[in-house]
Image (cartoon, rainbow, N blue to C red; front, side, top):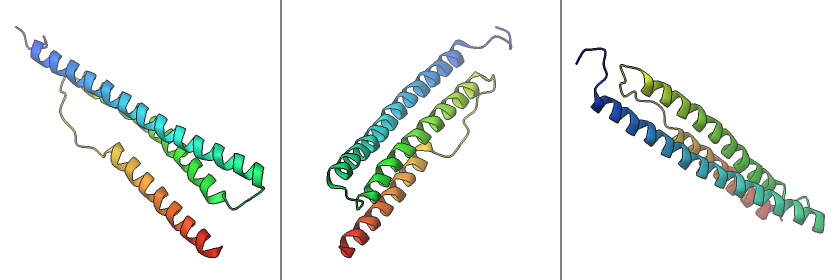
Length: 129
């Protein structure tokens, strides 16, 4: 076997990594759809309540819903971009593991910050009434 011919083991390992990248992207799609759906549901409920009761006190809750939609939308874009980068990385002949930042960590921090803002906003709103 010449040095230019890739080994079967190497090619099978690349295929396993590609399949793992596909499963990871599908998991991100499910997560992002859940975030977007939850945010959309919260926004629709707030919009309906504001129409029925003409109450502007639900503004913070609406921002919370829109924040979840924004986080989900940004995360799906970043997941697709990261997936594309991973596929390109696997294609190279000298494929090596590269440590990089975690998209899951970034999304977790975004949801944490959104949750803190929602918590503080609700506490301030309820103590003011």
